[in-house]
Image (cartoon, rainbow, N blue to C red; front, side, top):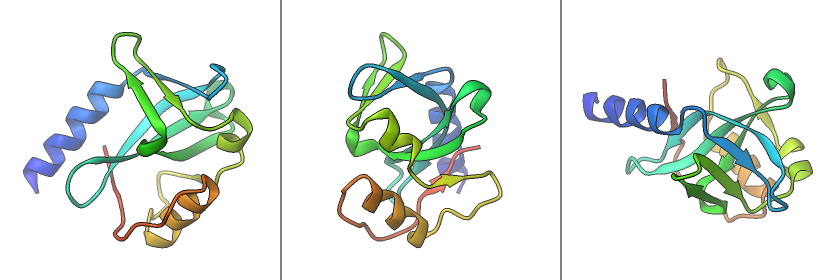
Amino acid sequence: MVDRYERLKELDDKYEDYAVYDNMDEKIGKVDDVFLDETDREEYIGVKMGLFGLSGTTLIPMEIARVDQQERRIEVGASKDQAKDAPHYHDDDDIDHEFAAKIRDHFGLERQEGSPERGT
């Protein structure tokens, strides 16, 4: 479990201060968290949306995201409204299979097995 914890910390540090942009190149928020699948691959990013993150945090599947490390930004294949209208979560919420399925359905993706594990 120590290796998984280190991987989560590494990803949290990697994406700290990354801005997230929609498919029209409009900023929608900042990366707040990273979620891994059972094979320790990045499965979702938690995006803090709105002024000071007051609009909440939503999960965006990494399969619709493109990371630009040079610009420290992530571009997602969804509109700002689609991201804003996605189910939101809070730090004390359990990101279980049911919640992950709602996110995937919202973005028009096939469902996957397992529950993601969030970073620190």
